[in-house]
Length: 116
Image (cartoon, rainbow, N blue to C red; front, side):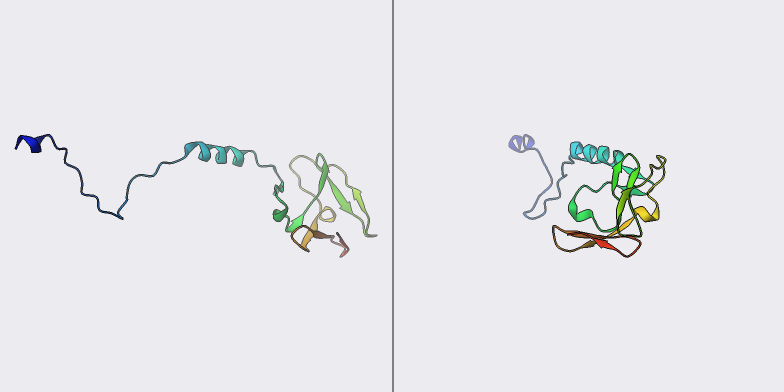
């Protein structure tokens, strides 16, 4: 009986029933949270990080709060700067149309399409 007193008793674990605790990667979680705090959002608009994110309504910012402005002649100019908490005006908003994996077309509010 003395031999059995030295043995540590544990739960019986069968093959295929691995219910052990998984390690959480706190470093990766913290980095993701830090990135969420640094999003560049102005008036409901955010910065595109990858080409694939360019869809729907887009605006092109060239200077601080100054956006590309479409004219009714089909030309583009740089619009007047906006206050910090204000997004682009309707003539400064374009609809992005995907042509291929590497090309898009921008349609202005006047119905003109530009892109190649």
